[in-house]
Amino acid sequence: MSKYARTLKELKERAVLFWPKELIEREAEVSVLPLLLETQDKFISVLTLADTGPDAWKKFVDLSEQMKGNLFLKHLMVLSDFAGEALNKLPPFKNYFKNGVMEYVWREKVYAYQFKVIHERTSLNNSALHVNGQSLIKGYALNEKMEDVIMLLLHAATSIGDTL
Image 1: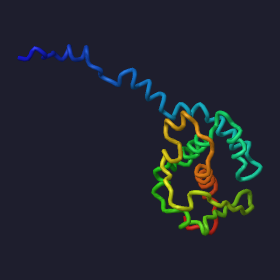
Image 2: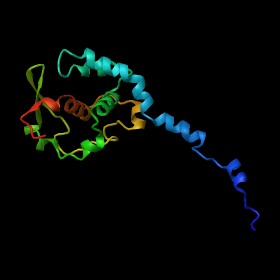
Image 3: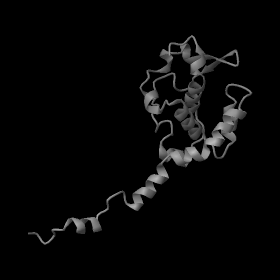
Image 4: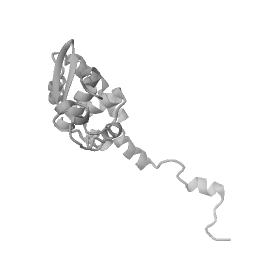
């Protein structure tokens, strides 16, 4: 018998049966759930206060230190249950919206939104949208791609003349 043979009791005494403390701490740093829970009230406040126009939310997101553009987008993705991987599987949005313009109804009035980035084929996965764990912890200001996706998530349900 080898001199390194251990009994089950000896193995249990020395084995790490679950994630080591270091991995648990590292995972806690990257997990988005605590951040989403912590900022949920702020997200709801932005949606509640931004009632002067269909894109008034941008003013609040741009001004907020706690609610960066990528975090606002992540909240919307969770709320709509439509994440980057699902978005990424769709063909270019020019196939759905003529000339890359989404016409939609908000408070009984028709508005038009010109997509800036996503009307052409572009990556819309979580990393490209900065809504993965590391990016959310870091925080990214609103950019054109995020804005396009936010407008899509907020208003595509009331869009008119599209084939989405």
